[in-house]
Length: 482
Length: 136
Image 1 (spheres, each protein chain N blue to C red):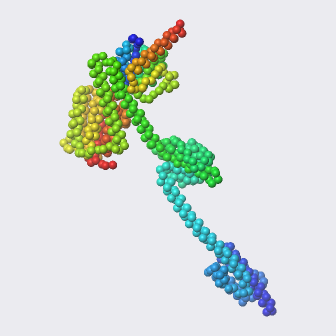
Image 2: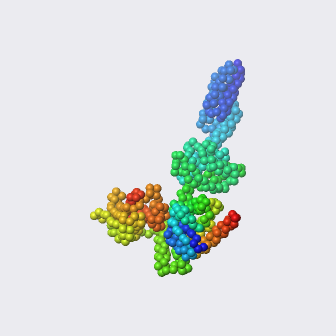
Image 3: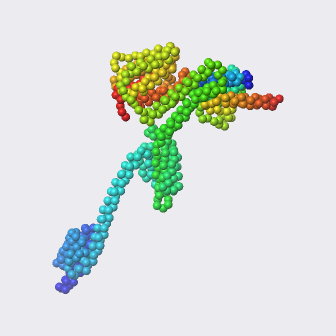
């Protein structure tokens, strides 16, 4: 009986150990809680035998508990042999320890890899954010498309320019984002060309968006095909730079040169023709010759005045003008200009007078430039006021803008409403008044530059055709440096 | 060339003045206008043998003037000599639509203008004689 019991006990112990080992092995697959499942499995196998040898079972359960604790506290112990199982289950427990050791190494390796991946992920995330910030800090619009012609990356200026929502645009096909078909075609052409890392430059007009009316214009577009690592196209980087303003400036410059040369050719034609007439003795009387000399002198003065004006404007525009600041008394200066122009006004029976209050009307300004402004404004008034008219120079203070306010009012022809916004433009002359008086078309432009660009004041005009014009300007009491 | 009528059109009085004197001294009968509109009225009044005009003028430009002259059968054969301060050359359209014979750039030489006027009037009178011969 004892022998039977011993055999049964041994079977139970072995089955418990196997159950334990199974459970322990399953641990490495699913986690330590599976060890308990293993113990239960061992118990179940005992019950299945219908025999209970409690001391032996308890013994092996104790073994399993120790084993379990050991796994929980230090998996290294197995491989180092810290755990000593009873000799009769030692082969099983040693196999188990080896397997557990190997798996534990693997877990540790995986954990290290996970940490590494996590670090890499956060670095990549930081890089992505900084990339986004860099892209958004650019003034140019940037679009990056993938090999499937879907949007991979874009910045805020691109979203604003092309009118799409940046948060919802990623990975959407380009034709759902960009309505401009020729821009889409450009990007697609570069993508299909697969000529990588070679920039293509195109100048392309883009229509303004409904929401962003300011954004339409001429764009310089740079397209670069990205490599995909297999000699194919990995996508396209498209950079759109607004060159509208640059174009306008360059157009203005070439217009200026062409207009200036035209304006200079006209007096030069006269000078040249009259000199040739004198050489050819076409002027038969002394009177005619004197007339010719006068024309040549007059036209030469015109050329030199135009060159002076052009140079002054150009100096102011390029910011290299030298100012000599003094306290300018506008009443005194106004008087001086009025007296200079009075003979000219008298020829047309125009009365010229000055109206002012009892105060001091002075500001820190360049005196010569102020003289030029007054000569141009009062001179224009004399030119465009018919015989018997009246010109009034009014000097006042404007406390709101802390400036001297000077107004030149005339009873002249007045300016048509369609022309009024252009009267301060370079070379602008009202077509219908060209015969009334000669001019360079630069006088008022120079006035505007001297007052606004140099002295930070303001110029303006109110006018009614047939009633006259009021040109005014303000000069701040104190000169403001740039 | 004596007594041939020439109309000189320019908004610069000095230019019309100097050309008038040069052409009058050569025996032409000269009238002047200061823009295209005035020129068209004068052409109607006294059919000139030739028109010398500036390109850039207020209201009606030199090209518009030449185009309008070509549009009317009465004035279509009047040769036009253009003066311009802008770089301008005749296009095929201008040649087809107008009777502009030459474009001289400003500053110009009155001597050269007179020479061109005489040449162009010679050509015009030859054409006319040819036409009359054809008609006969």
